[in-house]
Every structure is written in C-alpha cells, then in structure tokens.
Image (cartoon, rainbow, N blue to C red; front, side):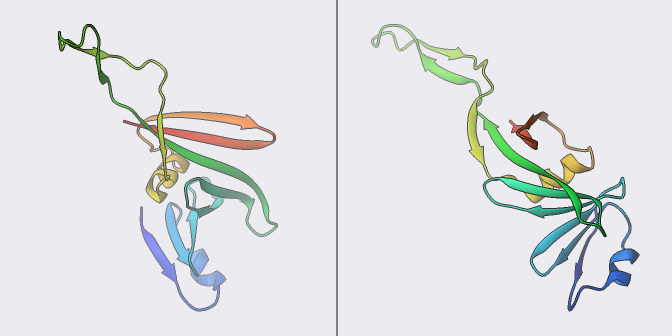
Length: 135
C-alpha cells in the first residue's frame, strides 16, 4: 500500500490524483482511500478509530472502533505437589489475553480485507466494535 503526504493547504486535485488503496497523511491525520471508493479517517491510540465516509463530500460516515488483544500463549502451569515439580501445559480456551494499542497497519489491513488473524465484529449501540486477535 503506497503512502503519500500532502503538505500545505488541502488540495483537492492532489487528493483526487492519488489512486485507491493509498494512505494519505495530512496535518497529522491519516486518510485511507479504500478500494471500494470510501475514505477512512484513522486515529490511533489504545483504541483505534476509523471514521469511514461513504460520501466524502457530504460527510456521511460510520465509526469503527478497533481493539487488539494479544492472546496469551499456552501457559505452563504447575499441577501437583510442590515437591514433584510436575509442570504440565494448560490450554487456554477463552481467547483472553491483554489489550495492546492497535497499529495503523492492522487497521488498514482490516479495511482492505487483508488482515491475517481472527477478528470479531460486534454492533452495539449503533456503533461497530472490531476486536483483532494476535498470537
């Protein structure tokens, strides 16, 4: 995915000249021209946020919230008497782990359908929450 940077004032001609599947940086903001013609304005932090504009000119958009969970690998837990020192692998079945900041690369990969990994999409309270699971 190519990345471009626009400098100065917003220039619509320059914006239009960039092809789809391009990340455009302008004044500290990240704009992603999606393959379906929509535009996503992406903000990062502990929770990534992508405002996906269906009609860029009229400002009609949906907000998607991204959360990344680092899955705890198979734990090695102690089972048995403390004198045995019998360590046995314990499998995690609940897909729990710890949250970590969602990267811009992961958000863009999800938006262009190339994210490799498990995702869970939930619609709650009129908003879309996307959880990305990483090994």
